[in-house]
Image 1 (cartoon, rainbow, N blue to C red):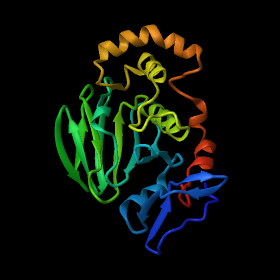
Image 2: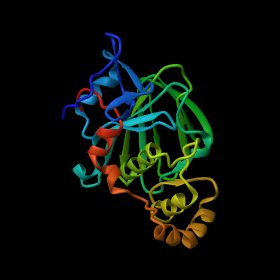
Image 3: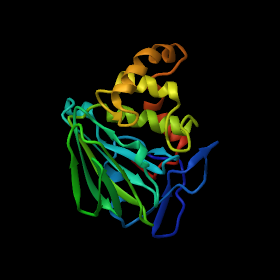
Length: 241
């Protein structure tokens, strides 16, 4: 699938991932080396480039869970220098393991309170139920392969959170509005769950407030965010994906 966006950048770099306003890219976006290992993965992408501009994170799919009957899903995550999820975004996936393999740059992974820095070629597997988060503290773009086994619903979660970020429905720390969060907890706690406040407290409050939130129009998953056209008209895509 070809993008209509003309790529900019120096001869040895490519810029994409900028917000589109009436088809015109605005802001800084994502700059990648044309000869770097990350850009090569776009050739095998099966989804558009998604972006959470609040957290400075981008990503795209390589293998969707539906292609493997839910056995696994795989994608690429890209984080801008000095960006990524804050510690308050520590979360767990109760029903599946998540493996990260660094493609380029370096990440700080926080697993069950312990921090470790991984660089290109290094990997870590986060077992089901292990609290974790990660960020890029370096001065360069960092990317990694992310694989979940079984696939779980992480694709849907990422589509929703990235879509909400583009629609201005996340706060400055990347958190959804309170009632939006209650619907997430009520529907997705068995897949993805933030560790603070304590999960038991979140579940109890969500059981009361999620029905109200749904009546007000909040959803855990928004189909419009899973439509390729949403991303193609909102985020500058690379030349092909």
